[in-house]
Length: 115
Length: 118
Image (cartoon, rainbow over all chains, first blue to last red; front, side):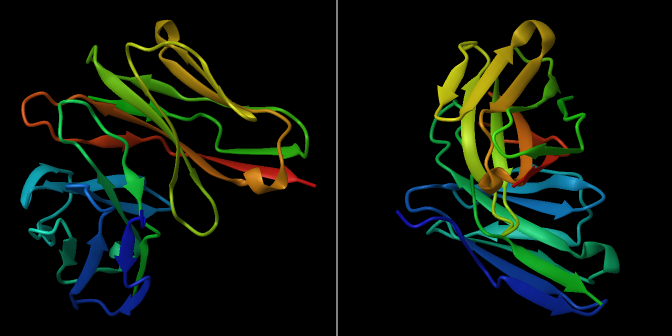
């Protein structure tokens, strides 16, 4: 099975712009979670989508949003970029068809640099 | 609230030495799941192990072993006979079971950077 894929891998934007990142989960996985990783804050949970619905959300401002499509692919959007949004954005997918917490499998990440 | 602590920020060992990475967690749930991930320089988190709170059996997989102790809320990871390829950042993570909406919310520790020197 192919792993989690994320596009683009690298991105450079300027302050005030917006950006959209894409994630394709492992085939059959219906849950997609997004994380932001920075040297100062570590790995922080952004949100989780399951069956096109946001199930959980971390403590991030409304500039961070996401969505999931019927094929489980997900996108996250960051509007009005700030310098502090420079980070590695990781996407993870899992089965979560039951009450059991399933393993999350991560993609290679998108490295975003805001100038 | 759930929390994961990895007190060791960086560890350096010489190849073939054994090394233990510590993980201490906090949770009020009786049902929870613990994970270890490895992040090599490429950036992708690689899954190593998953353990639920009802299974305290220690596990060994090749050179890797894990010691889960609920009494001390610890889930430590040992690499035996370390190799240069083990150099990476290792993360311990905790996920409580969210019965109300079945959602997931992984909380990661700050990570331990392991350098294995030749």
